[in-house]
Amino acid sequence: MSAGLPWEVLVNRKIFEMEYAVRGPIPRRATELREMGQAIIPCHLGNPQALGQPPISFYREVLSLVEHPMLIERERKLKALYGDGLLNQLESSNFYSDYVLDVSKQFLLQMETGMGAYSESNGAKFIREAVASFIDRRDGSDDLEGQRSQVDQIFITNGASEAVRYVIDLLIDDVDDGIMIPIPQYPLYSAAIKRVGGSQVDYFLDEEAGWTIDVQQLHSAINEAQGRGVNVKAIVVINPGNPTGAVLDKKTIREVITFAKNHGLAIIADEVYQENVYETEFVSFARVLGRDEVPLFSVHSTSKGFYGECGHRGGYLEIRNPPNVKGTNISFSDLVLKQASVNICSNTVGQLMVYLLVSPPLEGSETYRCFIEERKFILEELYQKASMIRDGFEYMDGMSCFGSTGAMYLFPRMDKLPAGTTDFEYCMRLLEHTGLVTVNGEGFGQKKDSNHLRIAFLPPRDVIEKVLPEWINFHNAYVN
Image 1 (cartoon, rainbow, N blue to C red):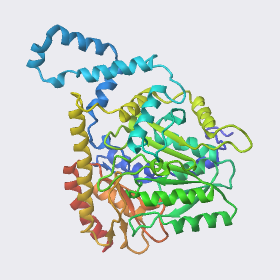
Image 2 (image 1 turned 180 degrees about the horizontal axis):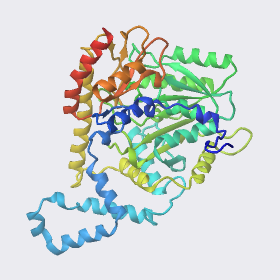
Image 3 (image 1 turned 60 degrees about the vertical axis):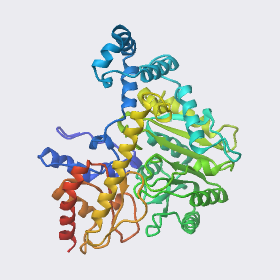
Image 4 (image 1 turned 180 degrees about the vertical axis):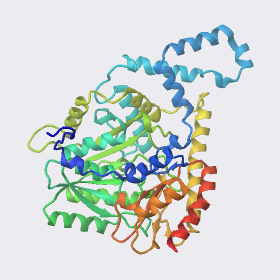
């Protein structure tokens, strides 16, 4: 090697070729502009607390206590020493409620080894039991058609992304193994399939019908893939949708389950936005599946909803009807556990956040009222901010936004870009003129010759009120 030249190394080409637009060139350019002093509004990620969404007090209070347990007893001693006299002189918010103290103490007793030690590889058992109870409550599994969640089929993970990778890594064994994904999609799925060398099978959502799933499109997509030799193993459904925000109804979910059953497919149900439903009701795939014997992999996360705890990386995977590995008596779930064991365990702070997500304060407790008020405020704010931006599209030439409002995103279509330009160029110029960081539609996949962008409706209302007129003016000047 010549002096001064860098080393070169061959790398895994599958990883080299992966793309992930939400951390791509537009956000990287935003970083450069911020360093140059330009104000930046990062709407490229569903990262609520980065844009000022306050954390839920209950979560952070418990977190602070379990990470530093001596505070629990100190708080109790202060209350015992000074009694109601001191408490009446100071605001109650200066003290942890007895309910929070009790929850924190009980969590540590069940955790046994504390927050700094490894847990079981699939997550502490009492946390998985709490997840199972949450799922049963959510889906009304006590009725005759319900199927109860099984604790040994639940895995606590470092966010939903890790759970998705566990499943896709196992399903793809060959370049001809394929997984159906919606277009547009969250690029985790295309990247995960690319990383293990499988085949991505696209099925297009029906935009003008509100980004719904067209069963005929599913049949066309699988027939085309099988015609070129792809062994399709699973179908991914994101509900509520990312990037579209669409929310599936029970009828559509039943049609997808029937399609999967008829074609021998597993279902990967990405349901991380199930709390972000503003105009309709969320229905889970597990609820509609009932006792049908279709393999179902459902994921949820502490990153979204009203909690927005992205950085704490908490999530879970629930498996229903796990298939056996072909030619063996080994369950698919056993291999998921093997993957989790290689990672030792998910981080314990994320596990705590999952536990709190599925174990809200008891109604009637002193903490419940504050929790409900904070939850209501955050969800109402999200919907109002989404409505403000959607209303703004009415003043942008050639901008259309279809479907109901769900998740944390809007995915408008731009029908009037100048000839020879793309949605990538539009988003880059939008960033440079207004500071808004969005992601161009091609980063999620879209029909040929169409142009979109995704924006997370997370900034504070005063920021939206300021930047929206700037965006309208930029857009109309750009397209005309």
